[in-house]
Amino acid sequence: MTYETLYQEILTKKSYLCVGLDTDSQLIPPHFQRLNNPILAFNQMIIEATADLCVAYKINTAFYESMGAKGWEIMEKTLNLIPETHLTIADAKRGDIGNTVTQYAKAFFEQMQFDAVTVAPYMGADSVKPFLQFAGKWVILLALTSNASSQDFQFETLASGERLFEKVLQTSQNWADKTQMMYVVGATQTEELAKIRGLAPEHFLLVPGIGAQGGSLAEVSQIGMNKHCGLLVNVSRSIIYASAELDFAEKARQEAQNIQQEMAVYLDKYLGIAGLKD
Image 1 (tube, rainbow, N blue to C red):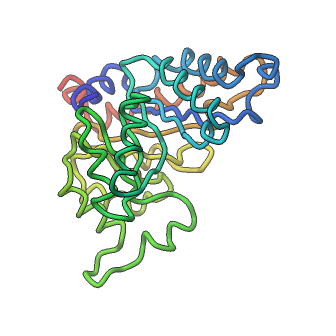
Image 2: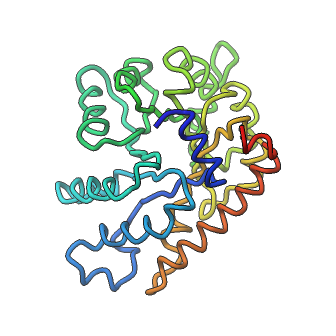
């Protein structure tokens, strides 16, 4: 999916919602346990209930990798259920070098056919550039995360006076432009979001942490939106686990719709009618 195609999907749906399929077999409604493939059946119903309200799906690969070969099969089948109009993200947070990182890229971009993968930048360009060799694919680089211990390294001040996350943003833009690279920025880091948007004015930001983690959609939208929206706000638990009863898909849709309707307000407020028709 291209930058322009993603932007047009956002305008068409008036949504920049990314639904996280971080599906835990212990948290899905109990009646699914009677099925042969409970996680796949659950994912299918979530996708069917939310596809018209979101522009992307993010699959946290750990929830599938932990099940071994069966989990990889479920992940691939889930990916195949997602409409082609949606950006698909492998939230794998890979980071390695040489032939190893090339194999990771092949796994997610050739074998699985994801559109994007999250990548850790700690080992520098060698751990990122192999992912960028795949035409039409995206790297989503960890920039500033929302966990409490992000302070351990990401805010470290370097000799240059930059903090480490600022150095990541500045340096990585020499590797790829806005059409190939996005950045992960936690929604609970809104006090830094204006600085990040200043350093990466054109790039899309993947923002987790709305909903169950306490991030504010209003603040993220006000501070982080650019002229092409430039935001993908990921919501996982508050949508997919909106109910543990038989009405779980209906409740998931209601939660996704509430978020989409709020997003439509911000798109109109910050982009305006002209922006929505650009």
